[in-house]
Structure formats: structure tokens, C-alpha cells
Image (cartoon, rainbow, N blue to C red; front, side, top):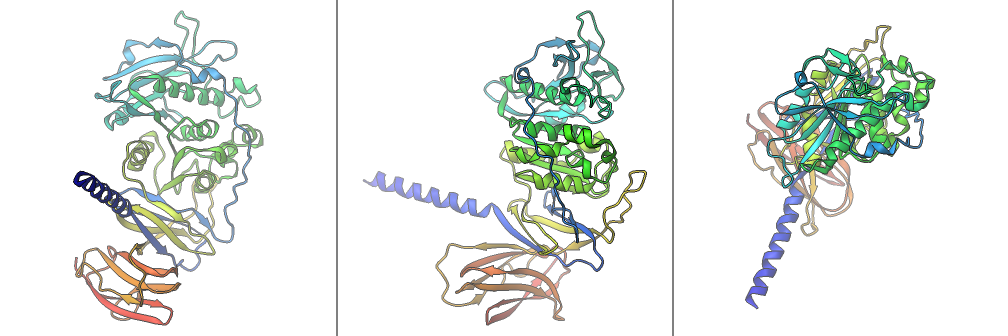
Amino acid sequence: MNRVVLFFVFFVSLFLSMKLNAQQTVNNGQINLTLPSGTKIFYVNIMDSVSNTVSTNFVTLGSPLVEDSLSANRIEFDSTVWSVPQIYDAPISLNYPNEKAFYYAGLDYMRHKTKVFAYIGFPANASATNKVPAVVLVHGGGGTAFPQWVKMWNNRGYAAIAMDLDGCQPVVPEGYQTNFIIDSGDHITGGPSNTNFGDINSPIKNQWMYHAVADVYLAYSILAADERVDSTKIGITGISWGGIITSIAIGNADCFAFAIPVYGCGYLNTSKALFKSIYNEVVSNQWEASKWLHLVNTLTLWINSDSDNFFSIDATAKSALATKNSIVTIKPGYPHSHEYGWSPLEIYNFANSVVKGGKKLIQITKQPSEDDLTILFDSDKSSGVRSAKMFYSNDTLSYDSNNKLTNQWLQYILQISTSVKQSDDLQPESFSLSQNYPNPFNPNTEIKYSIPENGMVTLKVYNLLGQELVTLVNMEQKSGNYTVNFNASNLASGVYMYRIQAGSFALTKKMLLLK
């Protein structure tokens, strides 16, 4: 009997511990925007304590984003892309430490067999009994199969494959210079090359984009068949043109666990930058990625600059809005290149959060709009929130004839309101506002309050002159006990007041920030 009781107590304790831990993993934050006079466009970046940045929607005042989707059914790719292709040896001169240089069979092109050059690598500890996640790496224009890109992922515990999608192979490892794959006696050459859709009037199976996406699926199949890889944890990331290919690939198949298109995206036919000139009506009807984004089931992180010459921010925003379970990271003034494209730490932390149980990036649960500027978000409690910044312009989004952004981005630091949690304690019988804890604090403190009835609640922070600095709570709330986590990282040391207003109840208390 005693053993039964002990087991029961242990089980209940374990359950409560798990419930408590689950409750403590997320902070609920709020930002209440006030737009500077004359603002026409804006977005907000929220950064956590390990420097991951997540962005809100890009908002155009007076002209909401319209998706203008060219919805279509998925393309039926040749079924052989889901089987392991034939493998061929590559020249010894292209070997790279701890990676295998090889060719794999692509789809037939113009009735001729093709092969694709690739590098593949694995973490040193990967084995049949210690399977690892993996990623397919898709280069952009002027790129090739980069072994150093594979190495970056190997060093982070991922298997990785990078392939040349232009029918070429690098002259030397890590370089950009390439040569076309020529017939070496086996009557097999490289597939088609990217000509900016110069082949758009050819049958679809003779078009470069069809082969590029098929080569991505074949690369996935190679990884999935390897005993060292967990086939349920294979992701994809692509840069520039590779971002477009990634967008099309996840729209036409559900094989990937995560996707990270960098720069490249959908809605290029309605964008502002260079790629709008490439996406004419014929190209858009055949290959505009937005046709399939509503079908995407892959967890997706979209990354772009706010001033990219090739892919404008509005196209990224529309792509994110059209894709379920997506996050956006906009990097102010970020350059465009392969090296910059594979550098953001958000790429690796997002992948880890999906397939390795890593900390999640900030999740924006309520986006700002012209009618309601409130932002709500969840953050991993162990990462916290470091800062928030609004980027805005007094002109509508515009590019000149050289595909350069003409807008001047202005910015200012926002006060991160808080984390608001409702506890499971007994319902309160009266209104109350507790002293913040800890006090003094730096820079985080908790403020608890109770409301015995449903109603509108505001909780604001003021300086000693009575000037309002931060709105922590401004919403309808159900009766209950609440805890607010206030981050004062953007305030100077000093005494501040916080005041609650709930119905006819109002109370003010002081707190001390010491940095």
C-alpha cells in the first residue's frame, strides 16, 4: 500500500512539475505603437536576449497588402525524384576535407541523360544508431555547390548537401568560378542553365526551373535514404534564386521539416525591385511561387533586407502572410550575397527549434495594422526579450530605375511592454495591485494584480513628472490574478510609478530601477 501511495505522490508531483515548467517556458509580450506624424510604411523588429530578430508584418498605411495569389494545383514532378538517383564519381581535384564530391543523376533533359554535381557531408558522430537532422542547400545566381556551406551545417550537427543547379561544377572547392559539366565518355552532361526564364515557352519538362526544383527533391531523397539521417528532420534553405526555388519546392511537396528562403520569395510579379521585370505575365502564370504558398505545410522562416535591390520587402511580407506557420526576419540595410545569405544566426536557431528541440524564436501572435497598432508576442522565457525597434518611412515603398530603394528608413526604440500571465489561483474577491518584485530591479521586474470581475484594464508606467512612458496592459481581461513582466532596458536608472485602472479601481505604486 505504501508503495502505491508513494507512486501516486511521485506521479502527481511529476505532473505538477511538468505543468509548471510548461507554463514558465513562454512570456506573453505586448507593444503599443504610436506612429510618428507622416508615417506611410513601417515594420517592427523584436530581438531576444541571444540576438534572434523577428519582424512584424510590413504595413502600408492607407493601402493594405493584397496577396493577389495566382492559386494553382501542385505540379506533378517525375516520380523518380523520390527515389535515390544513380551516383557517379567526381574529379579528385574537387575533393574537400570530410565531405564527398560526387555527381547524381538528374532528370533527362531534351532526351539526354544529365548529372548534377554536389557536395555532401555529415557530423563526425552521425551513425545508424545516432541519426542526425539534415538540410538541402540551394545556391543563388552566380553560385554553385559550396562545400564551406555544407561544413557550416556539419559543425552544427546537421548532415548537408549542396548541389550546382546550373549544369556546372566548381573549378576549385569554395570558389565561384564554374565550368559546364561535359561528356566524360559516359554520354552524360549537366542539365539546363538559368537564363532568367528564357526557356519559358518550352515544354515545362524542358525548362530550367522544373529541373532545378527536381534536383532539390533528388537531393532530399539522397539524404533521406542515408542511414545516418533522420528522414523526418530534413530541412531546406536557399539564397536569392535559391530562395525562389525553395519557395516553389515547399509549395509542391510536404517532405521538408523546415524551410528558410533568404531574399527570394513569392509575389515577385507585384513587387517593387528588380525581379518584377523578370516576372512577366507568362513567367508568373508558370512559376510564380505564390501560386502554391497557400498549400505550404512546412514551418518557414522568411529572411530579407528592408532595402534589397532584387527582392522588395512587400514581396516577403505577402509571402509570409500567405504561408501557414511562418516567421519573418527583416534585416535593416542587409547586403545581398551568398556569404551574407547563409550568415544570419536566426537560420540555425530556427532550424534547431524545429528539429533539435532548441529554443523557439519569438512568435508574434497579433500583428499590427492600420486600425490596431497593438503587437502581441510570445517569447521563450529562457531567452527573454532584449529590445524592440520600429523602422518607418514617410513615403510609400518606392524603387528607382536602377532598382535601388528611394525610401529613407527612420527608426526609434520601442518600450517592450511586458509579459502578462493569468495564474490558476483562486478567483480574487477584491481589486489589488502588489509591489513589484524584485525592487530595486535591473532590468526586469514582475508586477502582480488581481481583478474580481471582467472588464477593461490598463497598467501604465510614468516618470516622477507624471509623463506616461510605457503602457503595459491595455485590454479587456477576465476576472483573475495576473503577473506582468516589465522590461525596463530602455529606461535610465531612477524612480518610476506604475498605475492600474480597472473600472472604478485605481492605484499607483513606485518602483526603483538601478542599473
